[in-house]
Length: 333
Ligand SMILES: CC(=O)[C@@H](O)[C@H](O)COP(=O)(O)O
Image (cartoon, rainbow, N blue to C red):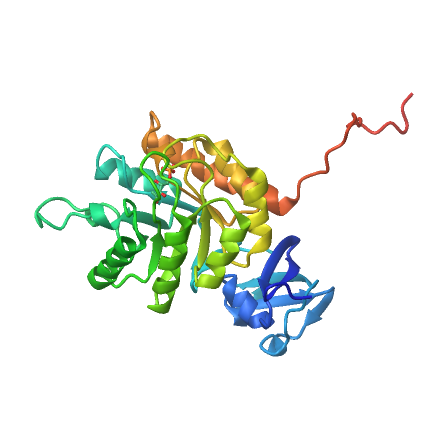
């Protein structure tokens, strides 16, 4: 049954909502797989590979997707990649580029984090002195995807202008939109954010959108053309950790888009927590940049995100009200 154009399925044991009307090949491609290199089992029946482009995904489907590695061998090892706007990534950690002592430290932290995407405030990019060092001298844009963001923008217009500038300068269309409501909380202004998302999507941008942790707002953003939902875990720079686990989970369950917790993560266990809630990834800046040892913290965050992701995929044990002995009782003398 379709709710708001999405259906509910399980992929490799994980619950997902995806757009109605996708073929298995389109679904595989949205997940970051090359459709020609996957094998799909649907409701315990193997689907012939030649028909993946015709078979529609249906509500309630239980899918197993296996990736082919190397010369045609089928491997049960799922690379567990994720994708946004047609680009596929292995790392689920996106890191910021503000608040570091210098570019060198920033680059070392990015390296330790394993991040494949860094986000950069367009308004901080040095344009006045071409001789001054630039971030791109330290973090190679041929290896790492730069995600321009609109940090510091308080109106939709300002954010749109900033991103038009970024596209003009570097050809970026995958962008991070944030429209702030006030300086005290740095909370997003959702009315302006929605308006800007709609305009940017119409102009061909692929906006990943910083937003409140509200499942209805997330749905509206999806309708407006967002390519990823990025709810705050707590106020930007606070390091308070995820304040509302329930709404983050509801966002994950209610959208077919990638969901990345953006802002407020303070330490590695909180990054793991976001991933255990089923998020696609985590974006963070302050927790790494303001750690006593930013490079070590970057490595800790990498491990936290990976551990949380594995735990989510593995499926948590059920909680019990009472004790249950760990050692079997049968055969005791
Ligand atoms: C870097 C960025 O894009 C921001 O949204 C923000 O700075 C992330 O928040 P934290 O600094 O709290 O991780």
